[in-house]
Image (cartoon, rainbow, N blue to C red):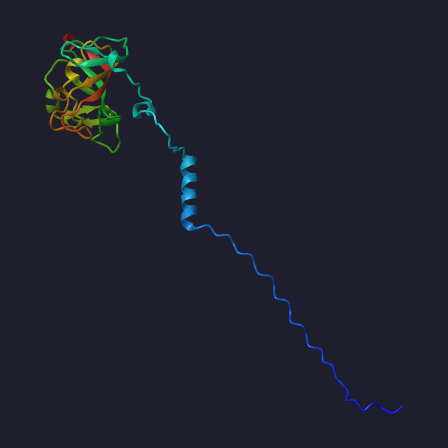
Length: 218
């Protein structure tokens, strides 16, 4: 058989294009602002700072007893007071030298307190009781010079200034007793105010009687 006159065909194999790698899935990214808000909310929840719809009064949240106005007793000078705790020790009489702790509270904030007296001969804070004479003129004891104590050097002038109401309303209290007083501006800090207590503002005064020295023993 005669050979074919048709031209021979040469077939070349071309490599197939390699398959492209599958696209990487997109990472879900949360906007930075959202994640920060979420983290802040988690931190607040963990710390216990939960926002209530109708929060209780500031006094109740801090564990202070809330006394209804009708339960206060009116003293002869017009001051209204309530005995939070009856004492069992000696009674403070007019002319007695007493030591007390006192706190002046305005709208739930302790503005003036004897528990914040500073130790002058050191760098510690010690709750130094306030000493005065029942029925005396307010501030008379603050004119004393520096006096020595077991804890260091103190001055009555370095102590917080108490309101004038404390010098009379302490009469009749017993050692260990605690009394709350509604102090009007004229027997408080008057037109000048004091610390967080604004001018001409009433406030609550809490007194704790610690010690009594009768007039005959001084």
